[in-house]
Figure 1: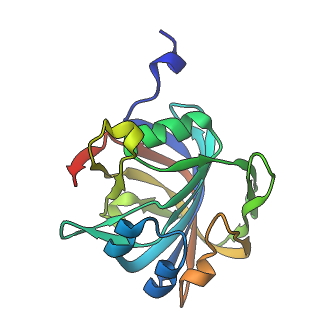
Figure 2: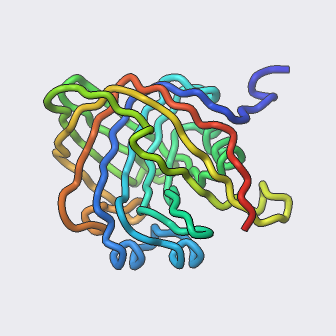
Length: 228
């Protein structure tokens, strides 16, 4: 049986590079936006620290692909706090399908133009049919390198599984990621959001911290079922 026929179940071991923009999430602003998710998400939203991430996976089970995602902040569920991805685009149809099946991550398809040099990165994300801009970013990694590890972020993703993959049962999938790489603080030279993806300036007050990560290795394990 060929690889494509067998599919791409978890776990996934991935390699690549990317940038993480952390920002203090202003709860009222996030709740007023269309990007917090459904009413159940909104009811459990706690605020805290949000993030926008752009990732270029150079090695993945489904083949290389690019990714843009938004985490509004923390969500409470059964007296625990979790992170939750509420908006995400990727460049691979296989990543869309298996990201939804494996971890209930609501991936959508987009076109990426990723130009990455040692001193400057330029990333443009567009709708595949209309060509309309979803997100556009230019950044400059600076200063010295330092180790980055997910051990510094001891939280799990908790995503509600879609009805088409849940056989009529309502449940969540909890995923605890692990990974490491080499990071540099970077300056955001230009950023443009759109109606299809949030502008973090509108969601936060105070400083934003951007970290460019090179040569990372990451594992998406098999998710744990959490009953609603």
